[in-house]
Length: 366
Image 1 (spheres, rainbow, N blue to C red):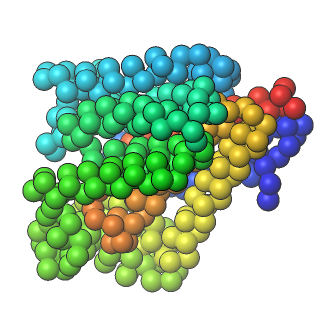
Image 2 (cartoon, one colour):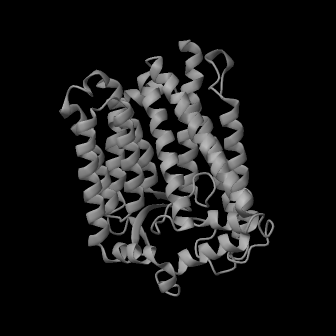
């Protein structure tokens, strides 16, 4: 399966897979949040409508506008990450100060910052594409800019978003032609720093200890993971049936959010869980293929931006699914397009809008 040619318009496979995932998310939120409140599905409907409107708005904006203002995107990301840290402005929930109150809606600074940083990086790489392999400074400068945003996000704290953004940024630099030795030095240094941060914070260190043997902490720090694993065990091959899950009934915390993949596995079984993995795999692969075509056509900004979107969504999916299955330490990250949460849904749909705009502009370029 190759991306549709410029004359054929949008990638219908990508569009269909995305709509299926959105529909799955709506159904699973309705199922997983039933024990909490009936209003969740109503709120999700409002989030979904807003996200689709945001998607449509992004699709009609020429990518040249984003490219022109890519430096401003970085400044806006920094501003949002600073504003959320101001006492009385940033809203604190469960010990984390990640949201800016806007009436009935709360803006999660780190979610918006992900999109803005990708726009900045794509603009930078489009300008310095020919220097990435020969000039080490051309590689270190964007890393420094990303590190500033990452440091501010860590202060919230939101370690998971920093990891996702960092991996996506390194992936974009690698695709842009960064020399392997420069890239390896940066990757080793950044990886060592992130590991050190994980061990320095007591609650993160506790998560790492719990990850090695969650059943020894089944009624403490390992409670969430063990309940998720129980959900996978109960689902077996074909699942208990849609709406018939037990773990979502106040056993599994964040069943409608970070751990919705475990609910999918319990109700739809291994078959359903594998199908979800395959859907996301197709989604990410199609995005990366669109990105490759754009770069090959020397539409560098749109190509690098699409690469960033594909990498970020793919990494976040892998981490969320890894956490749900116990393959990775517990970390609060949503499953894009599926988990409950307006910020994640709006930003993810906006990112995909940029990808579709990339393909839409391929027609005029072709």
